[in-house]
Image 1 (tube, rainbow, N blue to C red):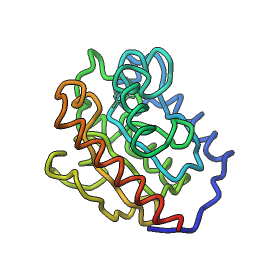
Image 2 (image 1 turned 90 degrees about the horizontal axis):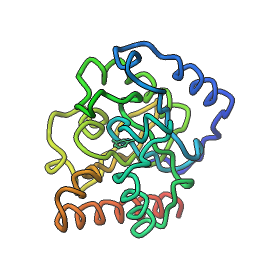
Image 3 (image 1 turned 120 degrees about the vertical axis):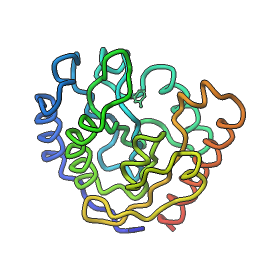
Image 4 (image 1 turned 90 degrees about the vertical axis):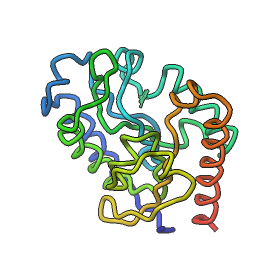
Length: 200
Ligand code: URA
């Protein structure tokens, strides 16, 4: 993990956001209301990566504003002392799949360059991946999230080594109750520890 903060070129980040807003790289462009590029502090040390926007996100243009997002926000605050404004929150796929179906492999591949460029410009120290899609993509594995979670991984992303912490998607916590809730809490405490160690 790096301890050297990299100044983010906000102009370049805004250019990237503007370019993404007109993306037609996959069929989701035809059904989305708008591209949900991501939200938060582009200079944040923590990047949170979910799966894809849902109905609320598609309507508002903001990631994680529905029930999953409210839970994510609460757990980040309780276990890591972080607010939305302290991180940057994005998704693997930036447009809503119709009926909230899973994104296809082709949609994930078409969208990947946006995430790669976000990571390269932001140079986060820790990336928290929520659920199977983002964890598998950024860890380059087919293993499932229950196997992957519970530890951190050094990964080369955006030309640097970042620490990836995979955890369950908050939607799984909403469905699953106490056990997944405890696991996500553990993983968020790991994020807090890693950020504290890097700053020491
Ligand atoms: N679920 C996600 O993975 N991303 C969002 O933005 C909202 C719900």
